[in-house]
Length: 210
Image (tube, rainbow, N blue to C red; front, top):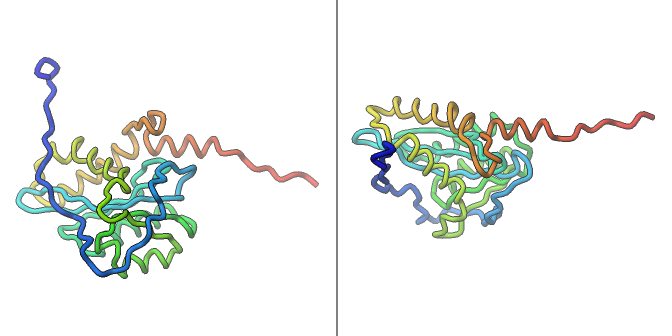
């Protein structure tokens, strides 16, 4: 590693972001680890993670489209209210305009079980889905994104304040992850390029002349 000027990236202190110890209603695991989807806006996964900012924390909620692994919505605030996950989901809905029936899968935390979040799903006809209790593998794709974000960007930074962290994480999502980062799952294309490629390959329906 020294010869090739490589440096290890160490995992930082763990912060609990999932509190499933509540009496709120939860969704069944509708997604059931069906991580391979045939088109955009069929199934999204959502979750919350934390980002260290000097002596405080910033919390990131994100929404990922399983078809292209693209991050389609996100929000960042210094705490973890239900509003955080609603802001991320609302951004995804505004950008993607999904049809009713889309599955949105998350963990069983109180934010995703809140009435505000359930109301947002109902407003757009989206179907909620949640991990089985104590089973983080049910949301493995989003966990993988968060790990990449931290190894490739966050753990290499020392953010002085929340605004600096917000700008840098947004730059990672928009300027690198969605537009440049290559995924073996996508044939070594970025999410944006993969979506454009698949859209171009869709058959064009031509009505028969009468």
